[in-house]
Amino acid sequence: DSGVTQTPKHLITATGQRVTLRCSPRSGDLSVYWYQQSLDQGLQFLIQYYNGEERAKGNILERFSAQQFPDLHSELNLSSLELGDSALYFCASSAFGNEQFFGPGTRLTVL
Amino acid sequence: AQSVAQPEDQVNVAEGNPLTVKCTYSVSGNPYLFWYVQYPNRGLQFLLKYITGDNLVKGSYGFEAEFNKSQTSFHLKKPSALVSDSALYFCAVGYSGGYQKVTFGTGTKLQVIP
Image (cartoon, rainbow over all chains, first blue to last red):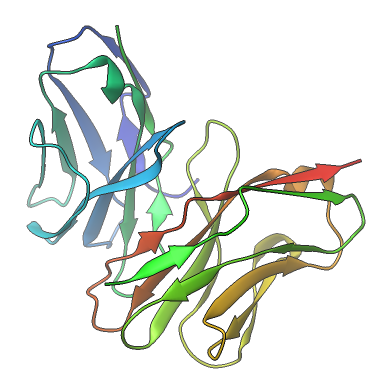
């Protein structure tokens, strides 16, 4: 158990819909990262937050957005969903300069 | 900009034999280097890291990695492979001053053959 929690574990939805994925980092970790993993794209970095502020952006689509709240949990919002958005979405957290601890992931299926 | 390359999509090794999974990196500044393992339908698990100090880093499950600055490499090794080591392995690089931005490689699938 990494100490990072993600909900929900599975999500099935239809094209055009909007979903919210939630992540709670390890106690004390200020950084939260979001990743998308699909079979054809590998592990793609989406976005990083540090203590509530956006710090780095990767290959995140405009239809996707994220935020980190004062209690340090984070949410990833995916809207106007397309079939190609079906993937595993991981959240990770870390303390400064150290390794990332990954959550178990949310498997999103868009039908 | 920082980058990391894992030149092999898949590595096959017989059980009991030594294994090596390759990783090379490019970064400005002093590198932070990491190895992670991912089992099917699971999140990535941290194996080991190099930030400073001894070039040979020991990690979980008997894995080790050697930092080679001149070759900009950080290969993952294990003296004797187990079938249970079969998984997807990711190398990652960050750098001091990079405010924790870490770049992951594309992953190498390790298959240990009984």
